[in-house]
Structures are given as structure tokens and as C-alpha cells.
Length: 260
Ligand code: F6R
Image 1 (tube, rainbow, N blue to C red):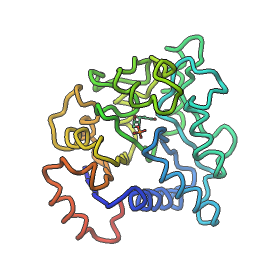
Image 2 (cartoon, rainbow, N blue to C red; image 1 turned 90 degrees about the vertical axis):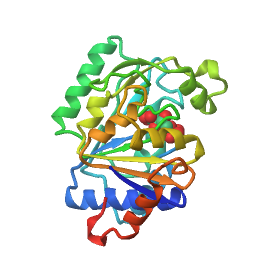
Image 3 (cartoon, rainbow, N blue to C red; image 1 turned 60 degrees about the horizontal axis):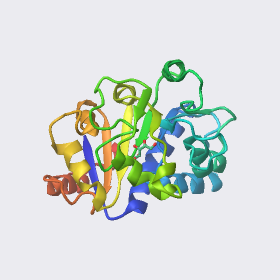
Image 4 (cartoon, rainbow, N blue to C red; image 1 turned 180 degrees about the horizontal axis):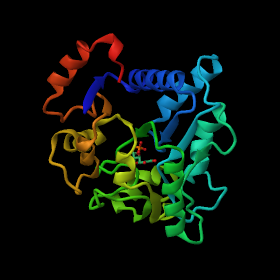
């Protein structure tokens, strides 16, 4: 796991956008994994800027979302399908239907989860998965206690996650209690995982993920078992890292050709 500490979200977004750009140059039909929430927004802004400047195209790429609330109406602005449409898909040139998410409105939710797993496999797997992290250490919506071998399924959100996400709704009562989420094993199947986190609120989760024991209590800690993980954090999110000095030193002497 490579941990990169930068001063702010904009510096992080530049590095992540460089990585996605170089993937799409190498492999224009790459499969991207998209996260929702605040963490990737600066990355999406930077990707949209590069697309507008003619420096980047998603025309042959495909993408899979990490998760979706169960039961939010199709037109609800906080439905993740609509959020991802607004934040990135409508701003670049993905082909119609190139971006898929789990169907939180399906009548048969387990069947929808199984179909989603199959769709990812049929696409050849995810090349680069963008991730945020919850204050309780969740990735996608794999809350504490999630099976480290889990696949896409229905999960119950913790009260902490519902409280964290209440800022997107009028009040906490409107935050759904259930979601469909890629499992930890689904995420671990992606070839390259890129996790971004900013702010002091994420510091404990980042420390547990990178430096704690691997445990379902801190689901993101499973990433310690992945061979290619890049973690990009700002100074505040890095503030509990024991090896911060080493990570800074390593990045300062990182060879230019290496990329993430
Ligand atoms: C969203 C997702 C979640 C978020 C996490 C952090 O698709 O998978 O794991 O990444 O809840 O959310 P923010 O970025 O809003 O702090």
C-alpha cells in the first residue's frame, strides 16, 4: 500500500486525474470504478476540465458504481445513480449505458446483486477503482462487521453513516436504512485501488486501514491484502498515521516514471 500525503484535495485530485488519464491513454476501453460522496468530487472536477480541454476522452471506457441506496425514487437527487450522472457522467463523453450501478429499486434485490457481479465479470473486471472511506472505516457501504469475503449484497447502514450522510438530505429520517453495495471481495478484485480522503474526521479510519490489524471491524483494512493500492490523503486525514514521516520521504524520492 502506497500512502501519499499532500497538502489539500486539489493536489490529490491532480495526481488521481493523471493516473486515470494515463490509464485511458494506455487502454481507452478501460473499466473504471466510481465512488459517490464528497471525497472524489475534486477528482471529477479535474477530469471534466481535462475532457473540456480535449485532453481526455471516456468514449470507449465503461464504469461501475460502488453502491446505491435501496428504495430512493428514480428521480431522487440523492439516488447515487443521479449523483454520479450529475458529478461526472453528464460532464464527459461516456457512451450511453456505459455506466452501471446496482439497482436499488429492483423487485428482487438478491437477483439484482448477482446480476451486477456478473456484469462486472463480463466487462473484464475493474481496472481502476476510486474509493472514499467512511469515518467508521467502511469502503463502499461495507460497514464494520462486513465479511471480508463479501460480494455485492444488501446491507444495513450504521447510524453513524446515516448521520454522516444526513448533510445531503433535509433530515436524518430521510436517509435510507438499506443499500446495495459491492462487497469487500468485489472491490478487492479490481486491479488498482485508489482511495482518497481529506479532513481530520477521516484520520482514525485512515490509520486503522493502513496501520492497524486486518479486521472486519475496520473493513477498509482488507486493502492491506491487495497488491496495488494507492492511498492519497491530506495533512489532516494523515494526522494519526504513525509512519507519516516515512510516507512523505518515500513520495519525495519517488521516481517520476513510476506513477501510482
Ligand atoms: C460512496 C461510498 C462511501 C463513501 C464514504 C465516504 O459511493 O462508497 O464509502 O466513499 O462514505 O464518503 P464521503 O466521501 O462523502 O466522506
